Structure formats: C-alpha cells, structure tokens
Image (tube, rainbow, N blue to C red):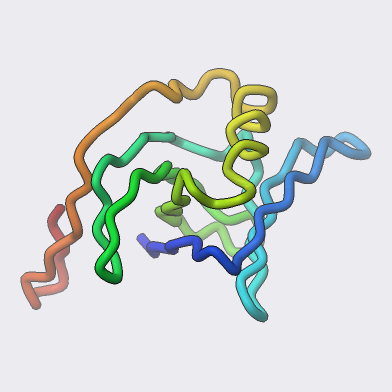
Length: 119
C-alpha cells in the first residue's frame, strides 16, 4: 500500500457529485494529481503525535483506493492544513458511514528488509 503525506503546499479540492458520479476528493501535489471517490474511502482515523521533519502534529489518516489506478493509499493529512476543515465537512456529507472519532497514536512503519512492513 502506498503512503502519501500531504504537505502545506499541496491542495485538497472537493468535487461535488455530478452527472450521476459521486463526490470526489482531488489532491494536487506539485505535478501530481490523485482522485479518491468518497464512497471508496475505507477508513478515517485521527493519528496523534505524528513526528515528521522535527515537528509534531495530529493528522487524519484516510485509507482509500485512488480512482485512476485503483491502488490503495494511506493518506496522512495534517489537521493544520488549510483545506482540513473543508475535508472534514465533505467527509461528514459524502461519507457519513465513516467514524471520524477513531483516534490512535501514530506509529511509523518499520521495514524488516524482507518485503514486509510493520507498524
């Protein structure tokens, strides 16, 4: 499963339902675009004490398959990101079955150099 960390420069765009299609989350990161249908988001979990680049913060971890290639992704979105409030509102509106109250301590995956990663 791929992992993507949303930086402060990246953008989240909420695309509402249109022409029979469901709502979609678009992520713009440099020259990369990713699309995730809200109905395909498997889980949402608040990760506490994420440590990256000498800073600590809380973030939302979404697990979903991207709409273009079907690859499962772990999306880590800091609560301090400017688009975070819009994302929360969109999750409540377009993915109401998700429990947005799940919390856990962040644990970075560990590589055992045998093809497997463990949290």
